[in-house]
Every structure is written in C-alpha cells, then in structure tokens.
Amino acid sequence: MKKTLMFMMLIAVVATACSSGGGTGADVNETTASTSGGNEFVMEAWADNWFAAYLGEELIVEDSVSITTERSFNSERVTFSADYPMHLNFILKDYKENDSGLEYIGANNQQMGDGGFIMQITDTASNEVVAVSNGDFACTVLHNAPLDKSCESESDPVAGEGACAFEDLPEPDGWKAVDFDDSNWTATTVHAAADVDPKLGYDDITWNSEAALIWGPDLETNNTLLCRVTVDAP
Image (cartoon, rainbow, N blue to C red; front, top):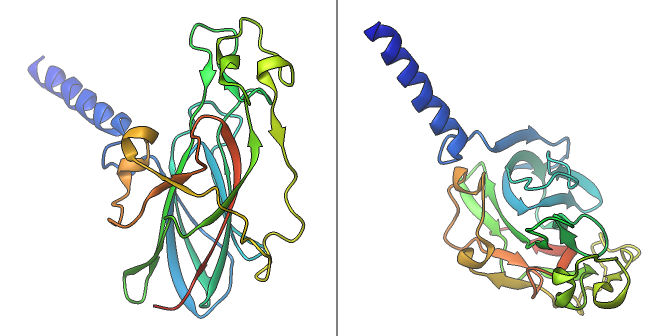
C-alpha cells in the first residue's frame, strides 16, 4: 500500500513539472530546415501568438501551433544552414477572432489580445549568439484593430463598424527581397517582459541578455506585422 502511494505521488510530481513549462523543454518544438549554406545556425524563437521566419524567400520555420488556436504559446528551435550576410524576414501575428481585433467575443472576458516576439540565432561552429531580436529590426504593421479601443467594451462588436473599425494592409510586393526599401518601416518597438507577460515555452529557452521582446508600438491593437533584419558576419 505504501509503495502504491509513493508511486502515485511520484507520478503527480512528474506531471506537475511537465505541465509547468519551467525548464522541461516540453514547450519547445525542434525542427531542421532544408536551407543551404556554408554555416550552421540554430534559431530559437517565441511568439504570442504565431510567427514565420524566412531566409530571403525561403521558409526556415513556421510556428507549429496554428494562429487559429487561442493561447497558442510555445517556442520553436530550428537548425538551418546559411551564408553571411543573412537576410531574414518575419511574419508576426497575434490571435484575433476576426478583424475587430478582439478575442473571447461575447464572453465576460472579451478583450483585445496582446502580442510579442523574441528570437536569437546561434552559430553552431563558435557557439556564439550572432543575432537577436531588438530595435534594429525594421517592422511595419499590416493589421491594426480595433482603431478605437472602446470596441473592447461593445456588447455586440462588429468588425468594421463604429469603434470596431480596422486597418488591413496587403503585404508589399517583393518585401522579402534583399534590396527592398524598408526605410519607412519604423514600427519596431522593444517591450518589457512585464508588459508582454510571456507564457509557456518562453522559460524553456535560455535567452541571451541582448535578446529583446519586440512588437509594434501598441501590443493590443497591432495584430499582424512584417519584420526584416540583415545579419552580417561577426
């Protein structure tokens, strides 16, 4: 009887540890991309809620949890090959039920969601972090909603009507190209962890001290962003 009780207690402890997201690695999805180049890298990234990363036009990794999933918190770790300089492009999205920008529509906790993104890249040959998300990224906001935050308190919010108006811009042609002019992409904003409040998966990665949580200037209404950065040889 005592052995059975001790076994049950051990199972409970293990289950608690695995569900906590703290240091177990359970919320990090690991993949390998089929890119080519003379150097091997590992990208680690966390997003609230979803991201896709490209080496130029070539997809490196897409968040393994669909953007249609509420509270889709996890981290991605992908090994890929590339040459310096690396031209990286990112699509960042926060979850929203529709173009109003709200989530939990009709429930007591109806609200605007909030976003956040952080990443770092390690050169496996030197084991040095060669790139991090920071204010040097060039980012622009494509989807912005609601344009009036009072939409959050509407009893029957309708996307595109009244306070629930929204802005939804198309992706610029050729934005992933090396020579694309992103000089007017100035939405990049570094946010404190206390403001983003990163969830599951975030703590399963040991972040470089220079890696910052970025998003547009408004964590709540900026729902879709494009970002670009060039990583030169160290």
